Image (tube, rainbow, N blue to C red):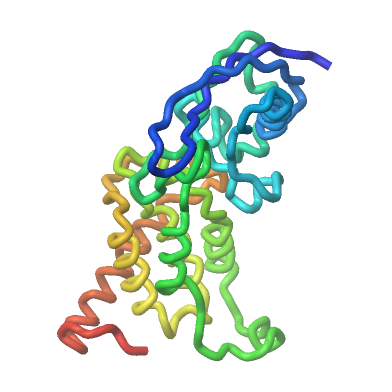
Length: 260
């Protein structure tokens, strides 16, 4: 096994109100460790020395939950494309490297502590319409509904979004358009999502804007940073749906919410 010596500069912030700063930590890591396992080693040393360990989010450590988001050398989840921080291995770095680690930077993702940010704004966007509430029958009934293969594949591509927030962190405007578009699109392309399609896009976009995310100006950094490679085609689809829903709302109700 090959051991490498690294120097970490890690953002430390005790609470949302506290002033944060970068602190330097030397670490020896095996090249086969994951990035989070390397941080575990650092924390073991800090605990043994009676110091506070570095706080960072993690759960599945299999690239599924999306909780491990952090900036590594200025890139969301680190240097490898289509890779979450928990799936990033230390062989992506070289012996003697300096690694800068900080939380996602966005006003809608306030820092809770160290590398942990509050991403509950994403939850509120989902609560604003990212679901199907109409009756679609039991599982056999749902499976009996015919879906064209192309639409099913596109819906599944959008549904891969794990809500990690890398798109927001990578965007110069801290926009959540890719996340919101993925959640809108995967339901908009399925027959079960049609009855609430217009209400959904209006509600979710309105909630996204109210959370303080920036606007999309087509930098496409979101797509490049996304560990699931969600396409910005979903943003174009959501924009079309939003325009149609807005016109429909104006025609039918004048100012009220769109009815099913």
